[in-house]
Amino acid sequence: MTAEIAIMNKNAIALAADSAVTVNINGDSKIFPTANKLFMLSKFHPIGIMIYGNASLMGIGWEKIIKMYRKKHSKVFFDTTEEYAENFIKFLKDNDKFYDAEQQKTYFRDYVIRFFNEVCNAIKKYEKDNPNLDKLTNRRNRTKKVEYFCDIIDKGNNIDDIHDSIQFLEKLKSKYAPTLKSFYDIIFENHKLTKGAKSKIFNSCYKLFSKDINLSTDSGVVIAGFGEEEMFPSLISLSINGYIENILRYRKVDSTNISHSLHSQIKPFAQSEMVYSFIKGINPLCKEEIDKNRINAFDDYKNKVAEYIKDEFNATNDKVKEVKNKLSLINKEIYKVLDDSISEWIQKYHIDPIMSVVSSSPKSELAAMAESLVNLTSFKRKISSKRETVGGPIDVAIISKGDGFIWIKRKHYFSAELNHHFFDNYYEGDNNEKE
Image (cartoon, rainbow, N blue to C red; front, top):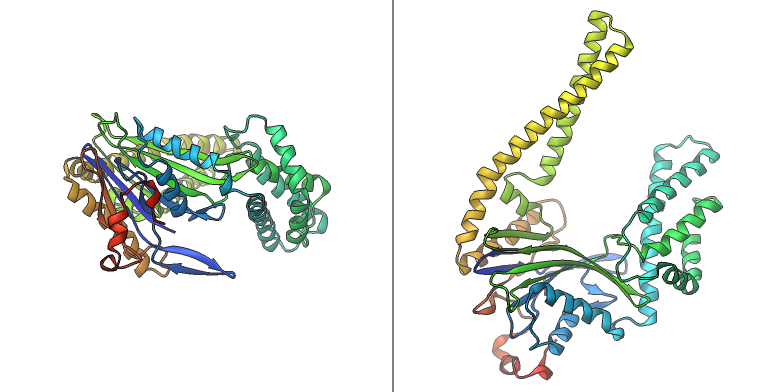
């Protein structure tokens, strides 16, 4: 995992990223604290890029891809940050050498296995929780579980670049049907499905690749800085999944533009709970638990009042039901008032003061704040019982309209004193791009 952040005001944008990366080796995971996740997107223009989530695209590391893009488009500039993002996506779509047939087959296999395991694990959990059901009931419930997951895929949004979904799905079937069947037989060996359920899950597997469905394998890509015609910084967040049958599976997640009306913004990526805790004064998981318990308490209160009315006044069942319905409406109104008042308090005493400081902070303070917030997440992981998936040196950069992309802190895997040639050649034309 990763902790990354962008802090923006009218003058500049600060980007910071940790260096931890988790690598799976023969079924075991190992954490290396040396990954590069923050880069210049251009050596000559005020634009940067951060990567989180999956560290590669179709088996090719993002660092290599970004430096290939930078080499090809080193002196190309665009009017807006949005256009930089569009050009980067175009570069990914147009480079067939990134995606050979074997890579696409591996991508199909891995994605299908992940989906099959998700369905199968849901079936296993249900059967473990209900061990005394007969075989017929079990088969029916397996079908229901399959239908639940298939419905999610059916309701997903189609990928924009797929203009003929029927033709696209037929191509997948003609190429990958044997692969699909072989892994189905292995994963569902002990959880036999009906022919109808099997047919549904097969069709959904193909549809997975035509829908905007994320099975936690995406790479997050953040492109931020200034376009040629932009006075204030902008940020585009993308989610990129993979490439199959000439289709790049990606989506635009978010965009933020500082303006005369929006003076500042703090945008965390990947592991963001500590940043939200800092900004809002409460951990989001803690707030979620409080909200859940509050709803349960209101429901409990409603039921107890209804029981009291029934016992004390010998009320009919219809009257008790009427009281419960009325109390449900009252509870919703009270809950909304409570939620609104808490949100207003958080906004007034936490968010607004912080954003006010950010809006007037000089570049050096933006950089220090970005580094501190990534450090906060790293420290939390260090003192918790969870694995330290955030850590290592923190790379920090400031991007401004006048000065461009400036490194505040940057790690190297080599000694700068022993590699003067690297820095001497760094800006000497496109052919000297280093990996």
